[in-house]
Length: 88
Image (cartoon, rainbow, N blue to C red; front, side):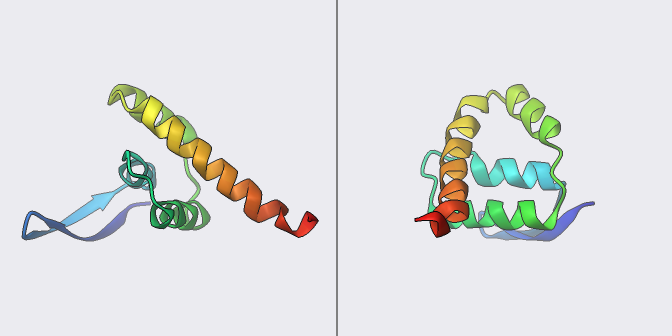
């Protein structure tokens, strides 16, 4: 399944279609990882069945695996906190 949408690319609007795995990588491949990025990834994962092997191999190919791993660790902590907050 493909996602589509208009993206603003330096003042130019262009129609772009991405598979969910690549969309996830575009969101997650940043040093300044914000709560809005976490929310976008949670929504993406709720909407699509992510092929994690594709995410992993693509991150390795583009040499961004350490950055993705670091941001996924933040995501996991956020997800775990949300899921276990009722225990306290």
